[in-house]
Image 1 (cartoon, rainbow, N blue to C red):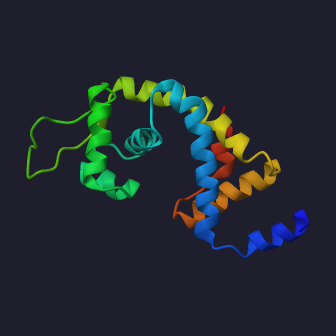
Image 2 (cartoon, helix red, strand yellow):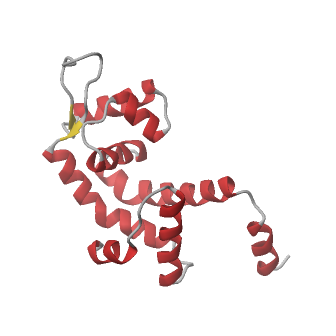
Length: 158
């Protein structure tokens, strides 16, 4: 079977399967380079990134956002809290909700990870042209329901 034939077969694969394969490649690249050196799991990195975008989320909100169980999210947040990367009140002010927020150290770890994460992304996307990479990001953003302004994002990237 030629490479072209395999390409046609891949185009017929379910979207979920293809997205999972790309996500697995990115996870391996990120974990093997930047995240491992910072002592972060992918779940911890995603949690920090989510809190940067949407501060003061509860454990239940984070669990829904990351599509994990509340118990798994509690373990992730607990470890981040132990390391001083996030903080949450000891007791809820109202109800059971304990909002989790990034600390300065958590923000610093995110900043230190950024260059390595972008490098891992470039490595995974290396088979695509620069324009195809931009289009891929834009399309993923559209599918994810995000407003995507690629030109602005490209100017911010290192």
